[in-house]
Image 1 (cartoon, helix red, strand yellow):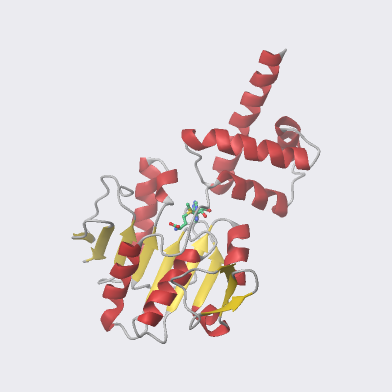
Image 2 (cartoon, rainbow, N blue to C red):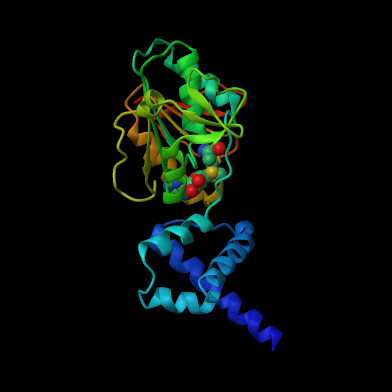
Length: 261
Ligand SMILES: C[S@@+](CC[C@H](N)C(=O)[O-])C[C@H]1O[C@@H](n2cnc3c(N)ncnc32)[C@H](O)[C@@H]1O
């Protein structure tokens, strides 16, 4: 009997994975499938369902956009933190040195710590104006990012965020005016609401995709840049990706490419 239950649940999981892949064009790597199964089982139970009965509701078109938004959120990993990659932030500050109004796109920004870290670093480097645009497939993450309220962080000064009770902080309205967020799936064809950024950064998102999908995403990101624009990823994320339009820039800690044609 237990074997039968396990088999039913395994086949429901397979169907969930296929359904999510076709609905959102995302892939859940083998190593994340167990975590997704646990999270989805918990969510199903919170709705009084099992994996299998929730799947039936999904197949009958009985799940609304909020259900799907939560399922998508559970399917992806959102770990992030302020100044997670100092090398990437330094590189962006360096690239923007002689640009009067830099435009930075952060793809897969999760709850917003990466775009706000870039804003804090650019401001500290003397930029009073810039556009930073964070996108993420998860509507829940984008909602948190737009709020701009976090636990205080030693590298985020009161010049850009005001302290709140209980060790929290809120980014000032003028900073929030320069750092915008958009729910967006980079694998879908809708254009991002920031045209011709000087820098596109994507870190710790590509690792969740198979090689051919990573290359597709990287090609899309490269095509968003004007000649002279930069693409930055975390180490080891680009695998063997190459395109004649992009030239690698020497950096021992992160991947940096410049659009050369
Ligand atoms: C681990 S977080 C990385 C956050 C941040 N870039 C960092 O390095 O700290 C990966 C984020 O990528 C987002 N993501 C995954 N697939 C995506 C896609 N196709 N389009 C946009 N965002 C995506 C996830 O929702 C998640 O919030």
